[in-house]
Length: 341
Image 1: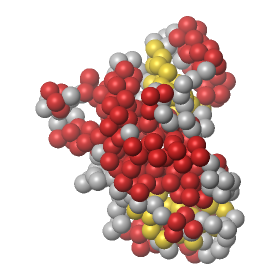
Image 2: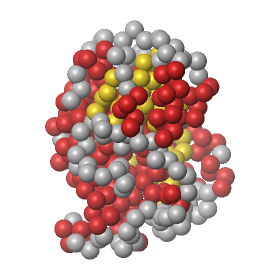
Image 3: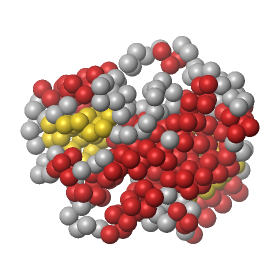
């Protein structure tokens, strides 16, 4: 990759560096989680996770992690906090990597006024959101700016929530504990695998031709983040689709040679083969099956979601290398149209 890196802009260099930092960011963040953090959620009737953009997807991931260990968890967009009944038996986890999301901060203030306990999960403990926190959870992404594609802070937040869920698991399920231990130990191998997969996916893409990212369960989080990464670089549109909903109605509008990525846990099964055959043979799509390599030795879909997420981050980045190596920033004034910070 050295020759390619020398050709790209400072902006793209920073974006790529954020993806690469996940090799260290995920294990460092997981190691930062202790029993005190997890104890905040014990004996609570309701846990609400809230965030925007990548942090919205991380909130969805947290919901899956907590549901898996028996907690009553849901995730909402900040504006939806008004539709919930909150109180002293509720913990609201506000996720904002930079600590500056205005609507997330507003949602936390509203939740606090109703008596909810406020947790802020952030990569920037000095951010404004931290002022609203009863408890502060800090990730260790190692990035120096939040003004580019926020790859490492996103998966670091996912890693934090995964670690919290493992502490709260009364059954001490060995698979989850073993998977987390394995995830921490395979950083370099994971990034190498993710980049290889990302490059392969990028070969399917074409400017202005949408790519459908199809998944379900925890891995739909990877699809959502992949969608956002493709959209941020503005070369083509990413569309996250739930697997069954794509079968029901997304397929009606498909045109020949549009792209699709089926995102699953590894190693896949016969139903995945049937699905892929429909994409390629019936719908005439350029399709790729993204699933975690068995060599990474991660068994649970919840944990496999993190490598799949990184692979899709890589796919969006390498698509940009193919079509717009001179990119200096995200599209403006589009990115400034809504004042989100």
